[in-house]
Amino acid sequence: MSALNGLAIRAIYRFEMARFGRTLMQSLISPVISTALYFVVFGAAIGGHLQDVGGVPYGAFIVPGLIMLSLLTQSISNASFGIYFPKFTGTIYELLSAPVSYVEITLAYVGAAATNSVILGLVILSTAAVIVPLQIAHPLWMLSFLVLTAVTFSLAGFIIGVWADGFEKLQVIPLLIVTPLTFLGGSFYSIDMLPPFWRTVSLFNPVVYLISGFRWSFQGASDVAIGVSLAMTLAFLAVFLAAVAWIFRTGYKLKA
Amino acid sequence: MSPIIAIRGLSKTCASGFHALDAVDLDIRPGEIFAPLGPNGAGKTTLISIICGIVTPTSGSVSVDGHDIITDFRAARTLIGLVPQELHTDAFETVWATVSFSRGLFGRRANPAHIERVLRDLALWDKKDSMIRTLSGGIKRRLLIAKALSHEPRVLFLDEPTAGVDVELRRDMWALVRRLRASGVTIILTTHYIEEAEEMADRIGVISKGELVIVEEKAALMRKLGRKQLTLQLPQPLAAVPPALSGWQLALAKGGNELIYTFDASEAEDDSRGIAALLRGLGEAGVHYRDLHTRQSSLEDIFVELVSDRQAGGMPGPAQRNPA
Image 1 (cartoon, rainbow over the protein chains, first blue to last red):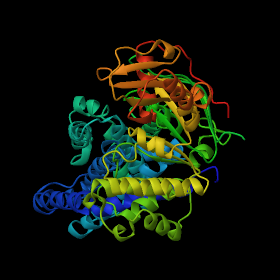
Image 2 (cartoon, chains in turn brown, red):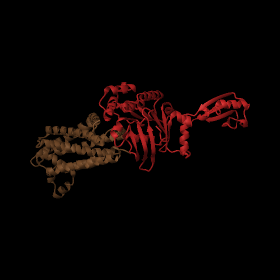
Image 3 (tube, chains in turn orange, brown):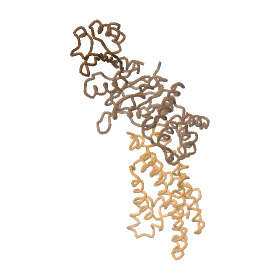
Image 4 (spheres, rainbow over the protein chains, first blue to last red):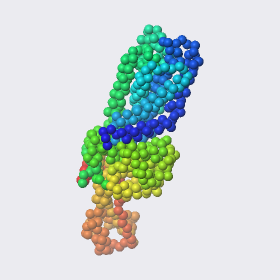
């Protein structure tokens, strides 16, 4: 066997992708429909009566934020469920007794969750292109931010899945923390539109940097400098990677 | 012969301070069926879980075919298949998919012919496209064995594989275990059914309160610790054992209508202490008998005696190192 158990990574990855395939309604169709409704209501219906934001029609302005909203929540949901379910059913014994390193387990679970989230993001993007006028200033950067954010928040989901000891806990962080932060992170507005005090407060919201960077790749303009956005995204990635490394080193909630 | 599994000073202390395993030394020989026996909570599953990588030991070492389970875990675990005690299965996968998944997880390339052979051996072939949640408990038990065999392990851990299965399935599993052993697979079989260990095992290890009380060849264990009993039914009750027979370990029962002689394997082989000598002695003492029967203690009797002695603090012996 080589230094990396590629066959095991592939087995877990395909297992997870098959699971996503079985739950298409929950993992793909449902978020696409709800996001499409946002586009219809805020973009086509109300958006027509709102001013452009930075020269961009409101419907097109909210596209990056809405994609990011789905990307963050689904990345967390996919990855957390992926590792939590074997814990719940007890099949985690097989994973722990297999000749698979922690790096390989993480690569497989996070890779599958991130793949699913990127597919979701691209489907939402395609849906948006049908409903609102859309332009992408930096397609490669857009794709890079999409993949980077999906991987980063799939790692976060993996951590939540390991930590959770009930289905309720799987939902707590996406619903009570990630969704509010995303709504308040400039999904529907530019933080430059806020009064100075609230703008300063918003800068403590980490999601601002994710949305701002992603929006820059579409519209060529952003609330925060692109370098800062990229650095913050990479910082999240580093923090979550460190947390995963700690979990596996200590066996936290995985091994007795 | 080098052991396939070498365990040295293995201990596990839980966060609560409970000593689940205490300085266990054990060698398991290649190709044997080894049965760790012990009451609930004795440490059998902890021992298995440590060897398989599910539980982290507090101290000590384990190697599988010379590969340390921690520093060389990949090589060690590749050799091992585990059938857990509980029916931990997926729900929405098919039998074929989950067994194929297990093979990939253990780093083996897809081999549909091998998977088919395993499923046929376990009478699962006609269920290969069934979703797992539709299967009965007995079939799920077989499925777990199929998953454990999917990557062709050299060591198979069966943690109470026949718990809750019907007699027919139990016999099928015994036959399978024998076939696996014949093919060179080392089997570690924990069971609550002592007769199962008596039927299947080459060697027995008794674990009590985290300590390995004894490790012995099954036959040797039964010879050393087993007792035999001769019961004679008398035509006339005796008030007491005749003085001429006081040198024998005799006891009266059922109001003096039965005379019981309890002896061990060494006495049975001693011409002056065996049954024939006693019967001659009875004739010389004028004691007649109408019928007789003998009984040999089972592994269960030995196990209960060992564990109860241990729990009562009556057995001082430390864990005995297997001399393999």
